[in-house]
Amino acid sequence: MGASSARPYVNAILNGEDTEEGGAFFFLKDQFVRYDWNQDQVEDGYPLPISQFTRNIPPPFSGGLDAAITGRGDYAG
View 1 (cartoon, rainbow, N blue to C red):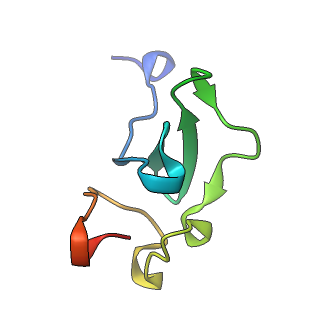
View 2: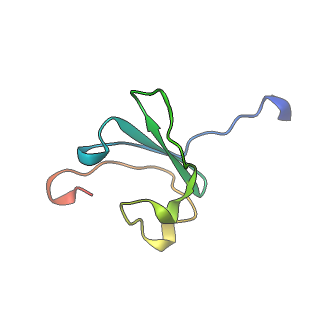
C-alpha cells in the first residue's frame, strides 16, 4: 500500500451505556470521538483529547489506548 491509501485505524472502542446509550466512543492515538448510532455520525465538538474523556482515564493512558472493555457491576465506569 502506498501512502496515499493509508487510513487511520482505531485503537479502541467502547459502546456507550446508561446515560451514554445510543453511541460509542472511538479512540485514535491521543484523541476520541463519540459516534451517535441513531444519527449515523460523529457528534459535534469532537475529536477531544483522551484526558477529557468522562470516565477519568488515568494520566499514564492519556497519550493513547490499545484496547478497552466496559466493566459491569462493581467495575462499571
